[in-house]
Length: 527
Image 1 (tube, helix red, strand yellow):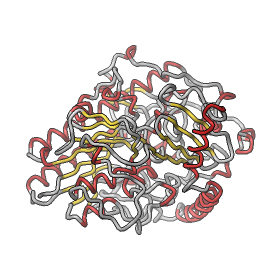
Image 2 (image 1 turned 135 degrees about the horizontal axis):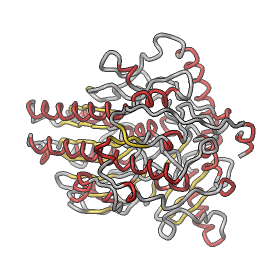
Image 3 (image 1 turned 180 degrees about the horizontal axis):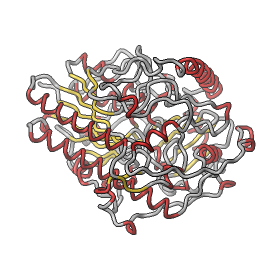
Image 4 (image 1 turned 90 degrees about the vertical axis):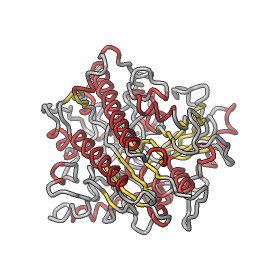
């Protein structure tokens, strides 16, 4: 029997709370909703690291981030680590990537047979965080500027990138249809939208009435009431430096919804192309995102946290053998995708000779049940925090561990907005202890902390040399001459990324000023 084609469609920084098939009644994303109606939707899917590169590494390797030393957005994915793509090629698949994957290091394929375009983000060590510098250790310039500068645009860096990503993917589909149709293919199409900055094309901004844009369900929480992780991010994102008004929030959410509709249209075009050339009936389509987006919930933006808006991701599968309109409530995560795709590709077999931390979800996708604990794990150790953090969800309970600081425990069945921290209460002591033991069973925080600090120091040493040489971009995957000037690359300061994105926006919007404040009061030992 011929193996099925498999298409992995990815958005970037897409929260489930901005999709109609997950309950949003404002956002217009009918093509993603159609995937859900024609397939299986996982209602409780999580990323394994709420930031781009480590999340993608975990997804493609089937390993939890700490197991492959994916500590942050400047961590190298080792060439010696087999990925889903290597195993698929062993099964005879062609493997193609169009769009973003954010590989760091000299290996820019990791099993893909070809990449169709340049990566939008850098492959060097420019973005190594420095925990010793305190919570303002973000090397990428993340701040509230993206929120207060939000609005419509004619053109942006991300539009340049995603238009090209979609065009090249559709052309590849035509080429596959004209080629050897007996050979199965794995095609990844990975968009940059709706990642910040919050700038929507005029066409997509205009699909929404501004007054119809809903506000966050939970407003800003006072600084003195924030948990340690959230307090670190408060300073890391510069929320004390730029005032964010309700109108800023509504503008950013309006633009974000427009960006979601843009991605949805691109997915509709790809699905139409697959159908036109007669490949859709033989193909399994998987749609997901690398992580979510807080979108103003609790006054927070971007990712980097384990709250639902940032840690939960859409996960939809459709195709031969997958039930239509089926919904799965069980907790799953992106680390499960590697064994699941291998099972789809090899008639239920997952033949690997390297460790896997994920589980095969094909039984759930096809309407069956699944053995084993109803449990997922996510980790975070990148910019903005000052210690390793980990989350475990089992059943309806979510337990969050921040090394050296207070834990959090939520019962999402009765407290979906995560307002009521149950940690330390006698009535849930047994549950808290069970989750704490489980969370620490394969993850020793003191040792992890040491490994992270050593990794940061080593990579910073390499970057201090590479940044001053003409070859510093020699790792980036660049298809066309000049792409390193068009897209985001490592710079000499944290504002480099913001500057590149700002120059690419048309019409240009001048950056807002930030209040200059002392960092003396927000060192790690003070928060």
